[in-house]
Length: 578
Image (cartoon, rainbow, N blue to C red; front, side, top):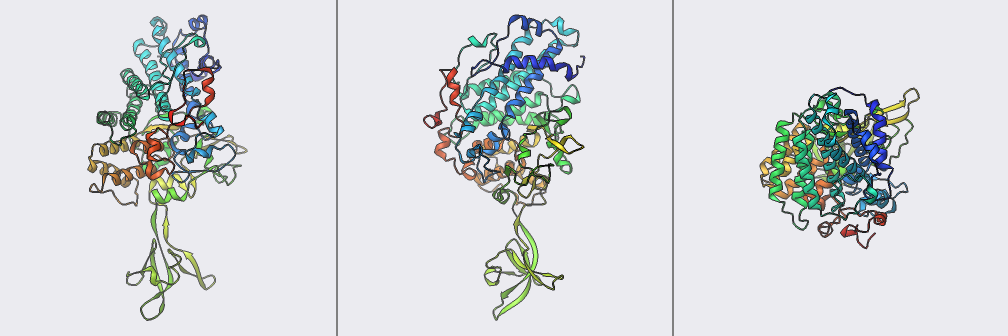
């Protein structure tokens, strides 16, 4: 097959995207395309490549939309301000979602608007309609196997449509289901919301069809991870099965066994056949720049192709220490509650204090571990009640300062982040998340116009391996679940205690979520993880079991969407609240 430069695609990409995005005011937006344009456009491999490029571009726009990027707002931010990260107030009210109120004006008008997702779906539907109609002879000039080429194009469109619907139904629940491309969308039918189980069945069907059309590998290195292949489809399908298993009946914590089994076999096939390899921990941070051996699917945001981001969520954590001309009060920061829950370990130090030895107060040197005090000479633990100053200041002691020939009263121990853990060491610096920090300046001479050149990771191997632990929990195979969790702690040199298979199922599930919270931090998954496992009761103060059962974790939709579709209704939980 001939290779075309992406520069050659640009006019065609713009044309096809304009046909979708400069739309009439309908909920499911497409722009009418006359027959003359359609006859001229779908004539070559280059036209197909342009359409696929446009589909990926629209997917990126949908997931990267808005302040801090909607993908992370839906998947991470709406837990709580103390769970994973805290949002500072800047006037838009975005931080309201961390208290469970999704109705603030900015939030409902931006995150409550699903129009951008339907632009992606419309593009996929056009590709799936038009590509089979292209005369094979027109493509045979540039490809050796026309049928395989058409399958690759349509397989990607099916995956993108399935991924988009998966995000839609996890966020909004019931959503309109559109699988046709309309030549004249102005006269297309207005559609009501479709039951989410029907939507999930469509996602499953799209995945099965896509996996039969796509291969495991890539045709060239430029496609790696940023182009959907069979592995991408399997990863999506595994997530779908677990989501459906655990949310079909919101009033029950018992997952659907058939879907759990399907997730199990899907994960086994993906991990055993996909050829993916977990990132070398000595190069841990490289995987979040993009296209690592671990990555299964990601959205390209590489500044090498001028696709870096000036609004990536990672930038909202960074300060002037990382980005030139930035201040020192970022919009987002990591609260101590997250560190204490996920990485807290006892720190060690030495110092002096008075202790009651039974006959008087003795000035003594201690070894301090956490808030426990041991006599340095004998290693005997002394209860803190018997230590004069430490009683009110656990973890503190007097340390000799030769410069002043006197003692300073300092914190020598207590608790802090686990500096041995690869993830903590690479992803955090105090309250700053440094997971995404690959800054590229478009004006390197003046160090201005800093863009983040980190791809948006959607699926990776470590995610899939941890999902196997979740499957094992649902199947009551607690030994397997514990082994997987412990393997992650061993691999990352965690100081945390290892999980025992003899512990309760609840406690092992909690430890599973602790491990997800370490491994998948700021990757758009954790909110949905908490819904599946029902561990929201431990991590999301505003989400009660009754609100969950009523679908109160789903988003309301922007009321303006009702203006052009009389069949739409508000999300059930939010009726009368918006």
